[in-house]
Length: 166
Ligand SMILES: NC(=O)N[C@@H](O)C(=O)O
Ligand code: NI
Image 1: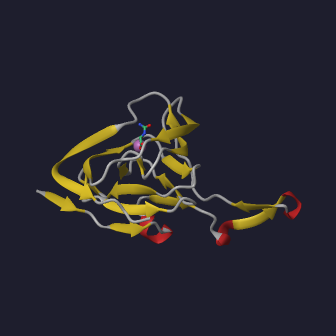
Image 2 (image 1 turned 180 degrees about the vertical axis):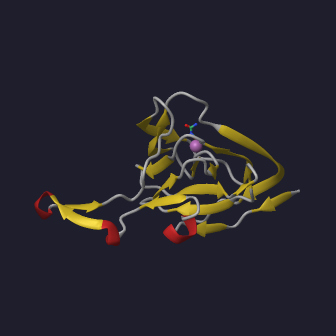
């Protein structure tokens, strides 16, 4: 028996319990470089906790998922945040859960536009990158350093996502 999850649009407000939405929010914009550049300032904060930890910048090239897709597990990074910003301009899925006594609760699914990224706050339950349609590149800012920065949880209940209409 599987539970079908609905998909909601990604908005700052809806995503606030889990982290930040990285998008060209006019309220954050200031002109720089003699007015030739718009700076959308401090959209998110990278966290890297622990002795010897550092913030790193990566590229992820994700292959598209096959749908209907089963959300069988969630993960989190106890020592740092993790952000995903699309470089290929394609929408992607973001799946997060509230924490329930150290385990992920019912997953919530967001559809991110191709001009939106997300920053998962440190220790927030999320599903690994979920790419739609075709191979897509993402700029990923997260934490490197000592310690095990990956905690995984495998669900007993099965959750399913249908492919979103784009
Ligand atoms: N493993 C890895 O670096 N990526 C995951 O953390 C992910 O959230 O995609
Ligand atoms: Ni992750």
